[in-house]
Amino acid sequence: MREHMKDGFYELQQAGLTEYGAEIHRGAFLSMFGIERVTDNDLAMMQPKEIRQALQGEALAELAAAGYVRDQLLKEGKYFARTQDVYRVALPSENAEHAGRYLAQANRKQRKARLLLDSTPKQAEQVTDNTARRLARHRMQHDRMAERIGVQAAQ
Picture (cartoon, rainbow, N blue to C red):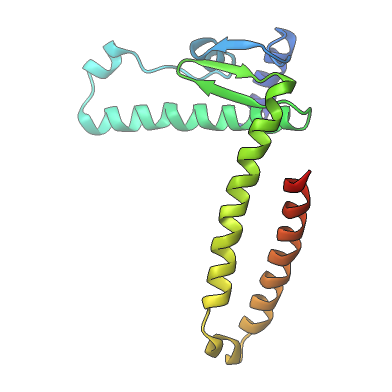
């Protein structure tokens, strides 16, 4: 599967579709990654359970391919997004907006993590296994992450 992803990404690069502002139609994207679309004719001959499985399989394969491309492009300072039936590499001027969304999501998750850690009963820390040590480690990791995000969000 991973090699297939690399091949699809290489094909995108060769076609110039990993450059800022590049757009690719969903059908072409799926084709580059060897993902077969389920046609209406195929669906007409399937039972409901088969239809669900076929559509879920296509969706999961597409998500995996788009996730792979997104991860590779993030390493190059590029954001990969889909709107309706078109995938697009965002312009550099749009990166701040996308980074802001990532930071907002991280902040929300940080608050939930802190609430969970702070609300964990103190009895859990008295257990004879390594629960107390794990909770302390998670609290330290949370604090370090909060510090990093706070610094980045202020910039």
